[in-house]
Image (cartoon, rainbow, N blue to C red; front, side, top):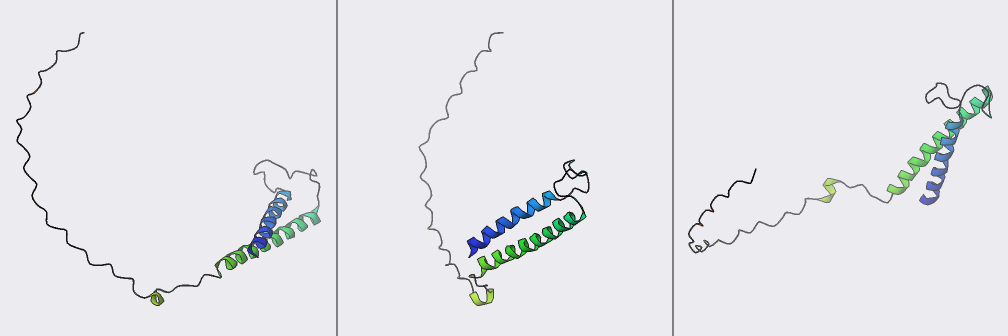
Length: 122
């Protein structure tokens, strides 16, 4: 059912885009189309038809959108915090075992510094 409704939804969306693109441009937003008698459908009655078709397709688009949401969420039951009860308490932390002091490393004399290197040739 959801797949069929989704297919209808996509077809309505494509039809809606097509009908909107067929309408005459009122402003020169992008400078495309809608000028004079160049369209294949002209006249006041055609404008009314396209306006009504756009409105009908928009309503159908919204109805299919809401139907898809309702169908996809109907299996999920709402949850209440009160119905779930208290969250499980975590176990008490365990104290770390006592640490033994590290053994003393063997004493080593500090290394002798290296003599400075002569400067590079100029």
